Structures are given as C-alpha cells and as structure tokens.
Image (cartoon, rainbow, N blue to C red; front, side):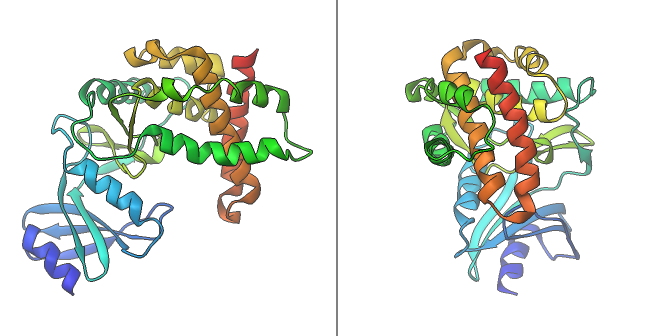
Length: 286
C-alpha cells in the first residue's frame, strides 16, 4: 500500500491496475488507469541484482529531451523496499519488424539517427562509459577464446577479429541506448517509441548502429544488407573499420558464452544470436 500511495501522489487515485508482461529482469510491470490518463509503472526490489539497471534508466529519464521518440518518465521513487519508475503509457500496436523489406525499417533508422543527433553531447545522464558495457562482454568472450569448446566454429576468424578492438575508438560523448532490439522498439499510435534504457552508457555515436547490425542479421538480412542499412545513419560513416570488427567479435562471443553457460530458458535464443554475429564476423574478416 505504501508504494501505491506514493504513486497516487503523482497521478491521482489509481482506478485500475493491469499487469503487463515483464522482461528478463525479475520486476513488476503494470498499466495504471488514473485521472491523469494511463501510466506505465515498472518496479523491482532494491536488493535485486537488476536494481542497477533501473537506477541507470532513472538517470536517463531525468534528462531525456522531450523531442526524443521515447516515453517521458513522469516520476521515480524508492518506496517500501522497491525502486519504481513511472512513464507515459504507450498504446502499443506491436513491436517493430526488422525483417528485410519491412516497412518499419525506415522508422527504426530514423530513431537511431535521432539518438545520435539529439543525445550528442550526453544531456547529463550520469551513466557509465560504453567501455564498461563492452568490458563485460569481453570478459566472457576472452574466457571462451582462452579455452575454446571443440565445437566452436570460426575460431581463427574470432581471434583475428577480437584483436582489432581499440578501446579508445569506442569512447565518445553520446548518450547511447546500447540495447536496440525488437522488444525495445514499440509501434504505437504516435510512431516508433524506444523503451528500456537499463544498459545506457556514454560513447561514440557509431556504436549504437554497430550494436544494431547483428540484430538485423538475426532477422534475415545478410551482413552486406545489414551494413547497407546502417549506412543510412550518419554516425555510422565515422565508424573505424577495425574496431567495428572487434566489437562484432566480442558481441558474438558473449552470446556464444551465454548459449553454453547461461540459464536454460535463454540458451537457444542466444545461440541464434551468436550464429548471426558469427556470420557478421566472417563477412568482415573475409
């Protein structure tokens, strides 16, 4: 009741609460019908390992420009042992479609373009450097390369690509979402909206597009087609070839690692992602 009372101070009496599907974090998600309109609330216990992701999303929400294609954060709070985030509600029709020829692709690329243009420089979110995110991937990638499973495909290509990662080249002043995929891009009545900023970080603007390319490949694009699509984003033209190849390797090897060592419920999906990333690495290595 304490958490509900805190929310009602902001939005007025809650007339109805509708539970919504959550993501991978062990939190709660709900739609609130209130006198101020519909709101979306997500909450997680303060002692949850995923609490840091909510904290990062809260930091982004406090500085997000109103012009961004993202729901506005209305309120956040620590109440009754929970961290709560309240956003404008997006009337969702569906998630976006990344497949080749999808009518959603131009809108998705417009969103990515807007991220680079409107979030450079970082508007003030105290988020970690992109190097922190990539270092997390790299630790798992390097552990796999140090003791490769017998069935790990494309090992020479992976090793060659991994060696090309230049940490200085990924640094920058842009606020990055760093987790663009279909479930985080919602098609609503007002167009495509980007949600879930729990992995937000600061780095080079081109990194946002680079992390999207294997998602396109996973959805059916060839690596060449995916990079051609990326070419429509101005920031991609500044991407250093060698470091893109290195980033492709650690992204893919991380998913190889999780497909073998992660929770059973996600292993199959991570194996498919790893295969898409491997195709990209092989394309770039030639």
